[in-house]
Each structure stands twice: as structure tokens, then as C-alpha cells.
Length: 218
Image 1 (tube, rainbow, N blue to C red):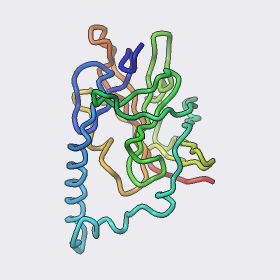
Image 2: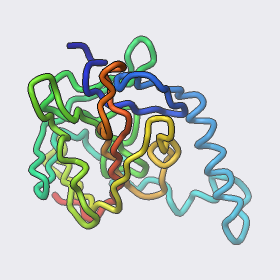
Image 3: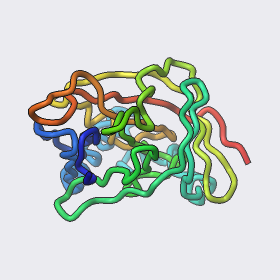
């Protein structure tokens, strides 16, 4: 079974493909341009109007803590019985976001922020496999207020609190909300959901968990 196999999640940076669950495309240039535009608009809406985007974002510049956040190594969600070491995911040669090699392991997209840094960190995982449930099978059962702990390589941990859980058809994936940079540390967990299309051999939807940093523990 390849990285683009049965239950791989479809995530998209700047675009959404309509085919199989494993089609995880990235358009970094487009995503960057849109992010700049987003912050440009945000800066212009501040009062008083800043002289530049940099001025507008000064209050939200990464702190020394954020700049030295260690790489994530494990995620735990006690309320739904999820506990997994984290693979590090990049981009495949065809521009697709890699997905975890192991059905039982989640993965952190290393092209984005580290959990606890300013911005939206992304962790993804399979919902099932050819032999049964996978690491994020119960992700859809999360509720607002549930805690997510991301352990880091230096022994510290970022503790996030779930804001909401959404399910979207893959033709309506909330790309902006998942990948746009945020002024505060946030986390997005993504897996597949909805019905399984036997012809396409993929799920029709994505489940997305949105969470914000609640605490940072040594």
C-alpha cells in the first residue's frame, strides 16, 4: 500500500483536488500570495491604520519562546484514546503532501509551524486501513473543550483545546481556515470522513479539528 492508498486524507494548500483520498496537493506559491493578501487586509483594518503589514503585525510577532519551539514528536488525545508518535511529513515529488507510512501513526507537516509556534500547525492521519481502524478513526468524536497534547523533542509540551470539529466534502475543503497563518498558536488535525467511494477508493469528506493553544508545559 502506497502513501496515496485507501484511507489517506486529502489536504490542500491553496487548491482542492476532486479525485482520490490520497491526492494531497500543495501550491506553496499560491498559498503564500494568499497569506500575504490576508495579512495585508487584516493590517489595513486595524486602528489606527499601520504604515505597513509589518507594523500591523508587530503585536503578533513570534516571541523568543515561539522562535525556539522544538519539533513535535508525539500527540495524545485522552478523551478519544488517541496516542501516537509523529512522523515528519514533507512534499512528495509530485507536489503532494506526504502522508504517514504507518496507519497507526499520525504525522506533522513540517512545511508549516511547529505546534506552539505562532501560526497553524497541521497534523494528519489515516482514518482506517485494509485491516481495521487507523490512528484518527475516532477524531470525529472530539468535542469543544477536549484537550490535545503535543509533546516535543526537548521534553516540553503544547496543550491545545478544541474549538470545533467540522466535516467538509472534498470539493469544499476549508483551505483558507486550515492553512492561513494565525496570529496565535493554533492546531489543525485532519483525517478522512463521510462515505467511502468504492470506485474512487477514497472517502468523500474530510474531518477537520480546529484547536487553540491553552497551555505550554515544561
